[in-house]
Amino acid sequence: MTQPQPPSSQPDVSDDHSKEVAAGAGSADAAVVRAVQEVSTLIEQSAHDLRSSLNAIQSWAYVLDRAFDTAPAPAQRALDGIRAGARQQLALIEEMEESVRLLADERPPSWQRIDLLDAAAQAIADRRPAAEARGVLLAPVTTDGAGDGAYGIDGDANRLVPLLRHLLVHCIWRAPAGGSVAMHLFGEPAHVKLRITESPPLDHQRSASRLAALTDFFGRRAAADGATPARQSTALLLTRRMVEMHGAVLSAESDGCDEDRISVCIAVRFLRQPRMA
Image (cartoon, rainbow, N blue to C red):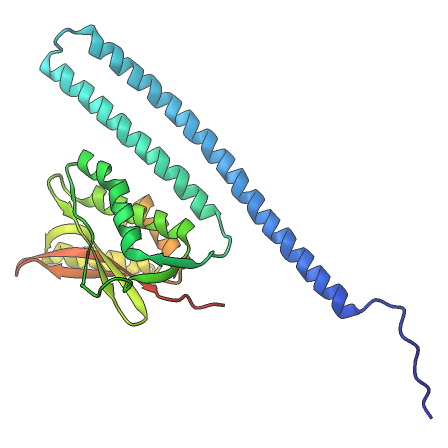
């Protein structure tokens, strides 16, 4: 009869392997956190240096403003331009800080229930001063009337809220003075669709060109015939990355204003529930 073997004094290989895997995952997470912290430190210092230069410009503008009891019209226009430019640069520095941090953060999303209607309304409120400074009308968000609770999604608030703000910034900067930016929500069975005005009404040729450029950009497709791809704003680059991390889909759409002119819109379809890996 076969004799039973005594229990092995060697450690369980599967247990050791599990511990090694867990330790490796913990080290990887710690490395990601350290990388984000290092990038944050670098961007904070860079932003501080840039603000210091702007502070000097603003100080000189203040001195010049006080040097005249009544500044000549050309001088007053120049001072107004300096102050407006400095404010815009400060806003760009803040957006740059946030963009770099978000792009450097490769941690997986932290899902929670979010009402996209509330998030869009908050983003519009946050960016209304920027729109007013450029003479752009930022309209309240509108919906297809699907009712309360129809625009809920599982989203990562740390990325979704900046995504909406930067998408608005991109559209505000593309709008002409006196123009407008409008955002609309549609409740679909598996998605919530957000659509925003990206360009003012254009003729058919220009709108077709812009639609093609955005479609290639959103799909990360190379330009045809090896042509240089159209440059996109930093805000739109960040938006694309945040949308991809949500498992959402970007697309370019047209909105016919009349027979001869078409507005270009950006649409984002957010899954109501993300596809888990």
